[in-house]
Image 1 (cartoon, rainbow, N blue to C red):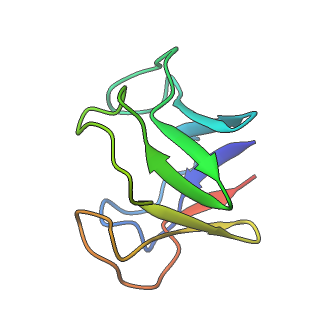
Image 2 (spheres, rainbow, N blue to C red; image 1 turned 90 degrees about the horizontal axis):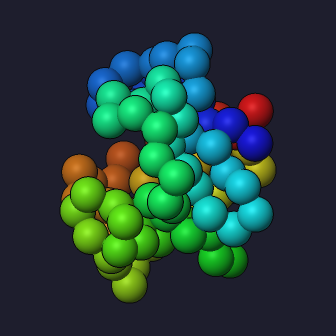
Length: 91
């Protein structure tokens, strides 16, 4: 499953997928600003995304995003804040 930015994302929408969910991990794709990474940036647990030790900002025991249906919304723990709007669509 690929994650595409929505117009609600702070950097605007984008049609090319920046992330990909494989099993219970989220990886960057070649379309991400930092390029493709073979190490997961997020771990998916209970419909929440937790930064891993491979994330540039380091691991967090708090979820940064929540999955609801086919949308991904920042959680109240996200460093850029919470606005309640979906930043990514799962396609």
